[in-house]
Length: 238
Image (spheres, rainbow, N blue to C red):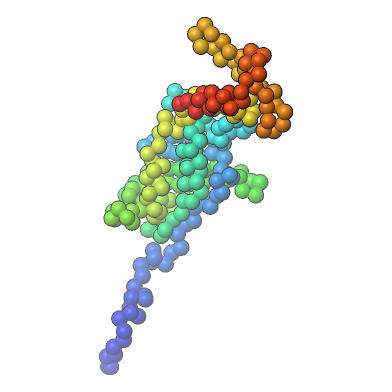
């Protein structure tokens, strides 16, 4: 029959929802160097970057290849590819939204499969893969924006920071494509044949060491710095 009083902070200590106590699914943490392939599905359209093996393309200056809008295998933009790999490697869930989600729960959160990320990677010599479904943005202020996410082999809907995911969803086949006309490495070049209109120049490079070479134009030795400057103009052309 006695009524007691206690500090209100003790009530706050136990004011948890069941989802607050559930440990959220963990997105596999993968080093960027172990990522072999990333498939982005945005509004049902697939885009892919695949790590390029030596000699697989006409130049080894690309780390990843992609498929153009016309279906052609082309070099992937180096900066964007590295940013994608880095973004995927750091994706993480922040909390559990629904620990035993139904199909209707998934649809209500925008997890119908129109947006997702599939990552293929090598871990301990074994080929592994995971797919992360991307859902709607959680209603919140811009500084704390999150999105619903879900691993495809799970029934738990989690939330993740929206900033990285939002950027991935802006990509398309044309933004993934490298735009360099001729990305060649000066350190691997042995000769260069240039034709402009009716004129032709033939350059020959004789390597005397890993970083030392003599440069010739039509058999006559030329200044190496001038040649490198000209080559840089070609290789950086987009």
